Length: 120
Image (cartoon, rainbow, N blue to C red; front, side, top):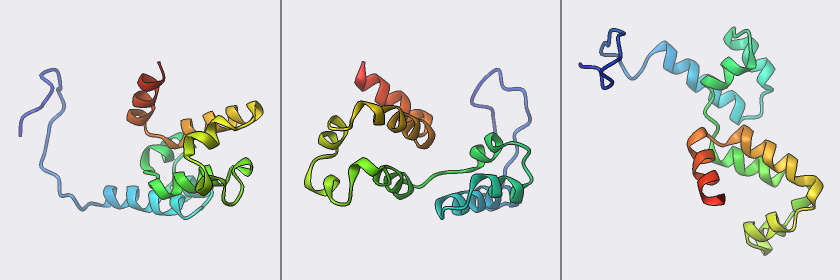
């Protein structure tokens, strides 16, 4: 196997797709996606910071959708009766920082960059 980046100096080796390390990612993701507190997941994985746990966690799309639906201003059926953009446009100004924090917490970097490109 050859490095894809010519400046890459570390040794590359063939790695099985199924490994202990891979199961740590799966365990972290399953726990977070099932509502386990990130501090508990951090302790279970033996990490010293939640930031390290976040590197192991891959949040599912339905978990992100549930997070947005949990916003009190959306109510029970508002998102079904209106388009998502209408709901966002009708958010009171004091809810926008919370929405921004949720998007920052739950969107992967690639989606954040794509969203920013579309907004500018």
